[in-house]
Amino acid sequence: MLQTLRNSIVIKVLGLILLTLLLCIPLDRIDALNRERGESQREAAAELASTYTGAQTVIGPVLAVPYVERWMETQRNSKGQVTGVEPRSEEGVHLVFPDTLHIEGALAPQQRYRGIFRIPFYTLDATLNGGFAAFDPDTVARSVSGSKLEFRTPYVVFNLSDLRGLDGSPALSIGGATLRFAQRMPGLSEQAFGGGIHAPLEGTALSTWLAGKPLPFDMKLALVGQETLSIVPIANETTAHLQSPWAHPSFGGRFLASERRIDAQGFDARWRVSSLVTSARDQVRAGLLDPAATASSSATSQVDAARPASARRQAMADGPLQTFDVSLAQPLNVYSMSTRAGKYGALFIALVLMAAFMFELFRTLRLHPVQYGLVGLSIALFFLLLLALSEKMAFAAAYASAAAASVLLLGVYFSAVLGGWRRGLSFAAFVAVLYGALYGLLASESNALLLGALLVFGMLALLMLATCRVDWYALSTAGATAPVAEPMPAMVAPTSSNVR
Image (cartoon, rainbow, N blue to C red; front, side, top):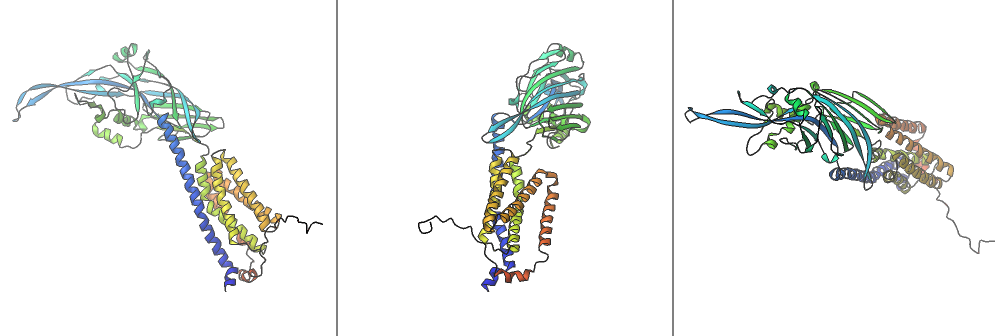
């Protein structure tokens, strides 16, 4: 009975299935290690963002017009009788967005290192030009009918998510005057979008503004950021043209590029966004004119009376700030690629064990479960080796090196186990084909499911065709007399008794 169970094909197949499931344990541990390394890479990026600079979101330039609204408030007693009038005042800031804004920029990629991890950065050299329409005081609605508005000196504000990325002070020319930026944005909140700078209008710029004429501007900006650049379309008509030698951009945000060219020399992209299709202005207005941030102990700030509180709350509830983005994405993220490879680990082990079983079946050789286990462990070790090598070299080179080592090991091992180098070479060739197919799955992300399904179907079809004439019932009887695979002969040192 025991001998029958040992020779049973069904028992052997069930044993191979159980072995495959057990080998999923080291695969799971390797996958956990891969996720841990990927998390360490993200922590390295976050650390560089905290000590150097992070991703950048550009808002501006915007014209801020501070004012004081004054009115006389009627005082009444408990009976509702008028007892007199008392002067009241309230401070506010009115935001004027550009009528047109065009951004012309070049992104130069950089690499920063934190330990073994490489984090992509960029330097932006850009020109922002456009203009503000003539200011009409009637656009600033009064909170009290009949009140008077006293306007103060307006100033240009420019907001960045991380001011540490500024490479020098931006050069702003507006209305024929050259203005200098100073820290902070007076009267505005810096909690919503990051830090900002401001430049008060003066000289010909202030004269042009007071005369009610349009204000053209031209601004030079040098900026450093981590991986992603986001631009908020705040003008009536916002256009942008960005180019870079980086050949692997990722476009995102609310608005994708209307035109783009990507080749080995880099990318060239253009955007065109109208204020009719975005609520970015309302979001910026709600974030910069935050009542909690602009209120003072002396007076309660009026946050752009032209926008009711309900509209401001709705703008903040519209979700993430609407932008158009471009990221210098990594062409091959070694940890994501290793994770994708590991997902095929169990299938890969099952196919290799199936091939070993076919050799045992057709060559009438018996393989011990320990030998099957060693083969499965060698395949699992491939994924660990791939992860370790990909941190030190390009992923393609790491994959080729790990696959070559695995194929060589299995070729040598099966040459001894199967009793001939031809058998070992054919088995190694089969494993090499599987490694090539796996790399094809990884390289073709969009067709990975189709290629994977075709691979499994092909292997199953090959197995069915190869065994369609096998008498499985007779194999259990034949297995009792099947020869056991001979181990490699041991080298015997010569002695005086066998030396002639």
